[in-house]
Picture 1 (cartoon, rainbow over the protein chains, first blue to last red):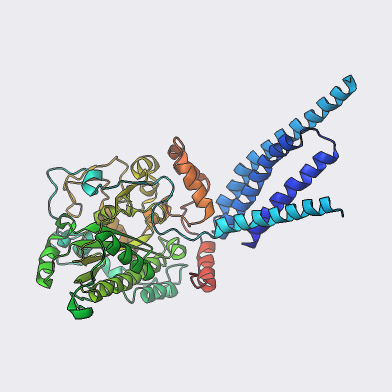
Picture 2 (cartoon, one colour):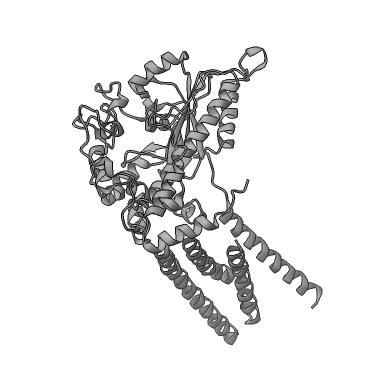
Amino acid sequence: MLVYAFLGALFVAVQWIIMNKLKQAGKAKIWPNSILVLIPNAIMMFSFAWVYGSLVEFEVQAAFMGLVTYGAVGVIFAIIAYRVIKNDGKKEVKTQEAK
Amino acid sequence: MNRRDFLKKSAVATGAVVGGVALTGAAAQPMKLDPQSIGTKVHKGKDIYDLMEFNDEFAPFREHDIIFNRSYGGHEDPVPMAMASWGEPKEHDDLGSGILDYALFDGAGINWGDTKQHYFLRPGKPNTVDGKPKKFKSPSDASYHVKAAAKFYKASAVGICKYDENFMFTENIEEFNELGFKPKSVIVMLIQMNHEVLRLYPRPIGMAGAALGYSNMAEVSSKLAEFLSCLGYSSHAGGNHWGISVPLGIAAGLGEGSRMGTLLHPELGSGFRIAKVFTEMELAPSDPITFGVEAFCNNCKKCADNCPGDAIGFEPKGFADGSNRSTRKGIKKWATDSEKCYVYWGEGGCDCGRCITSCPYFKYDNWVHRFAKLAVVTPGVQNVARYVDDLFGYGKLPTDDLYHEVWDRLYEMQPEKI
């Protein structure tokens, strides 16, 4: 139970830290970007929870398959989120320069 | 820290705790006893005849012809199996087939009962005011209390159907007449077998899971029969005996028939034993359920692939041709070749149970598998469910590491929390 509680806390903490970083970086679209971060964050935590849940069952193959498949989906979404947020920053700079 | 920062940090901390507790709660959710789970359709007001197909060959079935009775000798059409070697430990202590494992099995089955499983015969022992049976407000009210009592006695799931001679062994109908009461209702209970030990099938230690299930079903059904008798209604507990368990389970809304010939429950898979109590009490029957087993079993066939005795077919549902007298004719179903199955049991010297443990429905009841079930009921995903199940390594043969792990888990087993 403690492991799931820890993952839940980690999920919220990661989201909060990234939102703060976005704010500090002066990003305009804090909430849309946060939702973009929320998706890979949730998937990654889900994959960790899956690994733990499967190991508790002594299903080692299921644990690693879960990590590979769900984790891979999480990484893909994380890359997308990173690129979108990064490009969003560039656009903001260009807009400010144009002004 | 100013007030704004303090509020923000408090909100984050609260969110973290709530998130953690939510996840923990999801993981700790206890097993649901009623099969009202994801994807289950309840057929209100229907009965087994609406859900299953019967043809003109449907006829009474004798208990004399079930495969157990053909394998212990004295039958005119015996199954050629080496029952003499069944249940004997190997000379060397192989993991799962040594003296220790057989001792676990023997201990678990101590309350097994005799081969006909008469248990405690209590045909009517009124324990009521003025000798009159307890009156309930309605059959539904009676069903409610009977189901609650069954769960109190530790039935994993319970359903009720009307007494129907079509699903009784023919010899036993006569026996009931001799007992002096005519049952009106049948209470069908599923008694979950120990999941950990069962996973070790086909190693002989797996039999301990089944044996404990038998012992528990004797106890639970006897308690319920006593409960009903004390209410003033003649009742009789039974295990495999008296009635044909799978159709009674279907009629009582506890699941569907599967490719491996067993009753499949949406949450327990087939990892249970079926106990029955026959009573003269008028009870409201449960509604039968379906949860897509026909489509699932048509695609999956994992039990057939894993059956070491080649006793499970790959064909779609059909009507048995009568070549195997232990398979009842006249019902459209997946008929297993019980003769091949028992020959394998005889050769191996123990039960098998690989079909049950390889079935994708045989899973722990936790959030991981509830999530997987959500995926399985999604249209289109069902077709690939079996391949995903294989890919994730479920239903494999037990390893030596698992054997040691199971003993560790038995040692660390916690008392059941209410």
